[in-house]
Image (cartoon, rainbow, N blue to C red; front, side, top):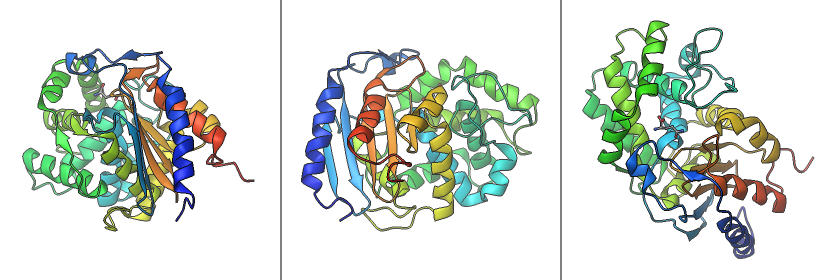
Length: 319
Ligand code: GLN
């Protein structure tokens, strides 16, 4: 076992869980009514080790939409199918130093990285246009859902149509980003902006639970082999790239501080999700809707920081 005394590890995780539970800071996302309805009390943590040991505590079976937690997944699918060289002709690898939905491109007129909205819309354009171009948007949706499902070891991934429709209605900024990138010729030739934006909103509206998301995190921790099915879902070099970008850009404009304090790849979303990957050890998923002013889950960030205070999981512990 990678964690030989799993039950005592879980006991420590439980203590951290209760400590974070008391934190009532932050605001639930309210830009669409479907997100605003989530309880600020909800709080769950799930763990899946690379050898398949599982532990969950709290609200781990309430489904939520993935929102930005889908960004590393769509980026991974793009890398897996197109290779890093092609993908990074279109998207950079630099933290933007700005908000997740800021109307800004880098000096090469590319989105800064695939973990913010502009970069994720670009990943979606690559998936729509360059991977299996014979597929209709409906088939592309199914293909993506199946890819997410494989990463989760076949656990249920749903789709929340109300969130999709609402997201699309309240998307002035995302459309602005979409058009801004078209103005700067950011997309592959033959890209259809309407299909790209719909696809981006669909990826944000994929739905799963904390438990299921911890398996996806564990697939990344395990170099692309799902620990519960032993299926090889992603190439190790793809996972290396995904984790590198999550490490430097996964928590929006908190990414530098997160890399300093936690020293691990992670990805947050406005749903209140936080995916944390401890390479070669385990995947962790935290979910709690209240967000700080940067858009990161308050309890999720606290959990990650407390965890590395107790265990030496920081990349530069053990020197
Ligand atoms: N659906 C959200 C948006 O595009 C996703 C962003 C996020 O999770 N920060 O605005």
